[in-house]
Image (cartoon, rainbow, N blue to C red; front, side):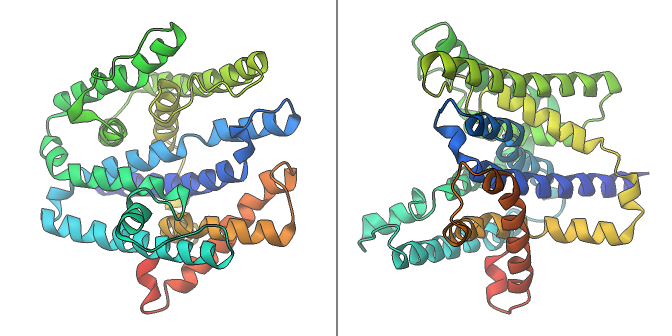
Length: 346
C-alpha cells in the first residue's frame, strides 16, 4: 500500500510540474492582461491569466512537498549540492545566455562593472522572468531549519495560519477598507513564499476526506472568481487595471493554488500508472520543466519576431504557448544528451 501511494504522489507531482510550466508560458503569451483595455482580447487574456495563476505558487508547494523531508534521504550538504546543480548552475548559465542574446539583438545595454554584474544575478536584469529563482534560492536556504519541523505538523500549521492572515488577508483588508498598512505586521519565520512551502508539505502528507477536498475545490474556484470578477469590474469602473486581488501571496491566489494541488493529488491517475508508455512520457516531460522555463522567453522572442504576431492576436495568445512549449521540450531533450550542455537543462 505504501509503495502504491508513493508512486501516485510522484505522478501527481510530475503532472503539476508539466501543467505549471505550460501555464507560465500561457501567462507570458497573454501579457496584455497586465495593461487594461476595454477589448475582447484583454478580457480573454484575463481569463487565461486567472486560470493559469496557480502555477508559480504551486512550484513552491512542490518544493515543500518534495524537499522538506530531505533529511530522511541525505545530509544537508548533499541537499545543497543537489540544489546547486539543479538550479544554481542553470540559472547562472541562462542568465549569461539571455544577456548575450539581448546584447546581440540590441534589446538591452550592459556596462561591465561589479555593481552591474551583481545586479545581473540578484535583480535578474537579463531576464525578468528569472525573478522566480531568487525567492526559490531563499526557500532552499530555509530548508535546513524547516526540515526539522516536518514531524511537528501542529507548528507548521500554526506558521501557515499566521502567514496566511498576515500576508494573504491583512494586505487585502487594508486596500478594501482603506486602512493604512503597518509594514511591521509580519511573521519573520514564515515570510516570503514559505507559506506555500509549508502548505505543499502539509497537503502532500495529509489524507483528506471527500468533504474537505470539495471545500478546497470550492475555495479554489472562489479565489479565481474573486480575482477575475474584481479585476473586470474594477478596471471597467476606473478605466485602469484594478489589482486589488492581484499578487501571489493574496488569498485568492492561495485558495486557487491549494484547490489545484489537492485536485491533482486526488486526480484519477490510476490508468496512467498502469500504462507504462504514458507514464514514461509524463516523467520525461516533467523532467524538462526547469529547462523549458529557463529558455522559453528566448524562444518566445524569436517566434514573435519570426511570425510578426502581436500580443493581441488570438493565435499568439492561445496557440503559440503550445508551440513554444513543444519547441522548448525538444531543445531540452537534445541538450540533455550533450555532455557539457546537459548541466544547464536540469
